[in-house]
Image (cartoon, rainbow, N blue to C red):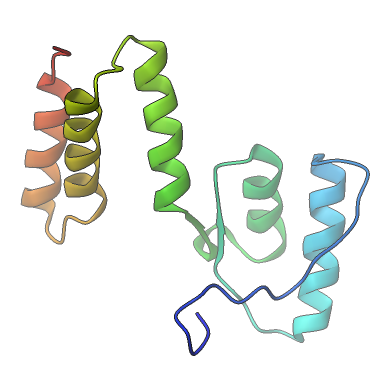
Length: 120
C-alpha cells in the first residue's frame, strides 16, 4: 500500500492474453527486475497466475484477494438463486467471518455457519 493506503502497482504488461505462457513470461521478467525480492502476488484465482507464481516465486508468495473472492462468491450465490439484499448481506457477513477469523476455532465456527446456511 502507498502512503494514501491505496494499492501500489509495481508492473504492467501488454500481452496477447491471460494465458499460462504469458503469465509465466510476465512473472519471470518481474522476478528478474526485482533482483531476488519475493513479493506476495494477490489474485482472483486465475489458474495461469496461480501456477506461474508458484513456479517463479514459490506457492507461499501467492495470496487471494478477499474482495475478488467475495465477488466470485456473490456471483455463485446469485446463480443459486440468492438475490434478495438481506440474504446477500448475510452471505457477505458470513464470508467476512471466515476470511478474517484469527483462530482455528473462529474459522471452524464460521465455516460451519456457512455450511448450514439456507437461502430465504
